[in-house]
Amino acid sequence: MGEGNLVWHKGKVEYEDRCKLIKQKGLVIWFTGLSGSGKSTIAVELEKELTRLGKLVYRLDGDNIRLGLCSDLGFSEDDRNENIRRITEVAVLFRDAGIITLVSFISPFEFMREVARERLGKDAFVEVYVKASMNACIKRDPKGMYKKAIEGQIKDFTGISSVYEVPENPDIVIDTELLTVEESVRIIYENIKKNI
Ligand code: ADP
Image (cartoon, rainbow, N blue to C red; front, side, top):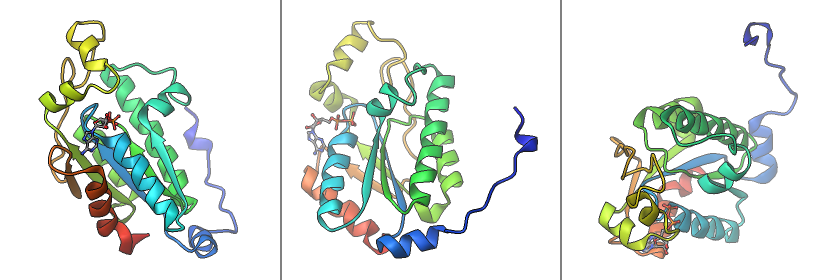
């Protein structure tokens, strides 16, 4: 692929310079969980709260990215891994820009979440497992996807016809059957406030 002939071209402005300029540190908050567990709902509210507190935040949402950057990808294991690889690289850039980056993707495979953690470095990466039982997600079914998956209209649907690997060592667990959205935002904020 020609990587052998590529050399990183260093700039004269570093991550630390940008942080000083915008008075914050970059951080990637990576939400993982079943479809309908509440990743996007919580990320949207956390984005609003951090912005209210004067922080520069950007949200990378699974569905939104799949409409653009990853519109050529499907839901096979290879395509899911490529989807996560690309979003990891985008998150690396955003974080390097000094931005607090909220990534809400099902990201079902432990292996790919580990790749993201390693690529970003553990100080720049916070894994939030947004937990809800399959029954709760099916009941919520905010986009009508479970109905279609159960009827067999969607193949490779996480939790129905494709695996979801529960995180082994998440930094934060948010059980959305027990917590309100506001409580979830507060817990995440309390966990990350010293790192932003
Ligand atoms: P995901 O991004 O994980 O696919 P969404 O955020 O799109 O999930 O959908 C979650 C659904 O669950 C929404 O309709 C939301 O209103 C509902 N919901 C109910 N209780 C909660 C909660 N405590 N936290 C987050 N979402 C909740």
